[in-house]
Length: 148
Image (tube, rainbow, N blue to C red):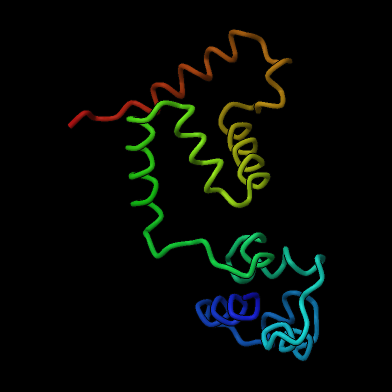
């Protein structure tokens, strides 16, 4: 439930109710009502709550925590191994089924691609073929892994 997510994440972050309230821009009493389940935050408060509690907006809205205790680097290494041994359609189908914040995921991919290549998927129709090819080749080199 939402109230449980708010309390658990606040305690994990070692924050006081008043600190969360101040960050979000509400009174401590308002935040306390959210954490006690008497009221729920407005949509305009969700982004700030997610930011300070270090969870996704979807986790707040759904009142459940998706994240695991797995170390992020261990998670990325394991996913990379699966990606090497699964075809793209299967891999992306599983991503689609498991990612709760699909828009956020796609926005982050677009932002990261622009950071790495100076263009994103939304720009591909305007990018010269040689630039696309260079980006693909650079990515292939970066993705090469030691077979042992």
